[in-house]
Length: 326
Image 1 (cartoon, one colour):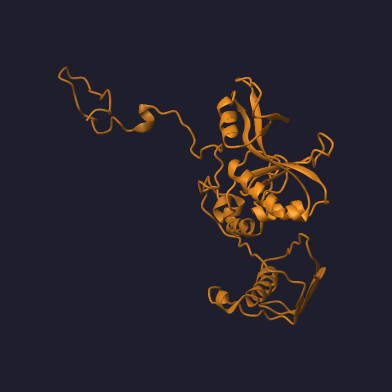
Image 2 (cartoon, rainbow, N blue to C red):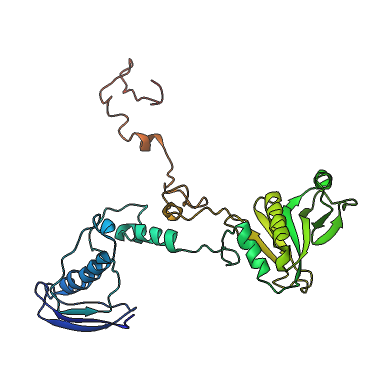
């Protein structure tokens, strides 16, 4: 990629063989008197050639839906990238308008984020991704041979309760151990939990060592844990120091934070970045309407106008007391 934008022999409209050598990735201002050729250089030459080259790089099928721009009158341009042009125009004031909507770059940004973006957890910054059981197994088998680990299925996350029925159910299903608040217990003698305290409970699905011969058993254990924990499996490596960052690894079949932060993330779509869509609008954003105190006068400023000469039987002018009836 060239580091400079070089223009030679620009003759579009009233330009007279203009040569330029401009830096890339910088803010550049063309200024001058009206009619001096600012728009001819910026829009009709540089933007037009960048857009034309981009369209020509697309397939014939895609080009039929896009308007083809004529080649500007210029001898040579180097260092161009696909360009976006923002016209200067007057717009109607709208309380929902933003810089992105007024300049019409908003739709392009939504498409860019949805198709090329990578979601990250807003709490810890870790990448949010989904993985298949086979991808999880491959990552485990890529670790050092002989590494010991537990396959855990997190069935309770920071919830209050005693969970005696859950322990009985897991015991009846054939599981022998659970990890409660970081401590492994036997299901034949489960712990007595305090009802008003929050607890984390993981089922110990299997104890394994990294080796190629254990691939099928590892696959079965991972799939079992994913089914138990609604698409989440946790691996604990007991040989690592307590509190070490890699002592536990969390995997998910869904778009989820690897560190377990609660998120509601769907596949990225352009509507995910639209504040006009229920899929992208912030649920805590303020409403767009402004509250105003209402009075009868504000509802109908001319409420007495239809009765300018109405007189009561006693000769006094009659004024309606309410407009709510009828």
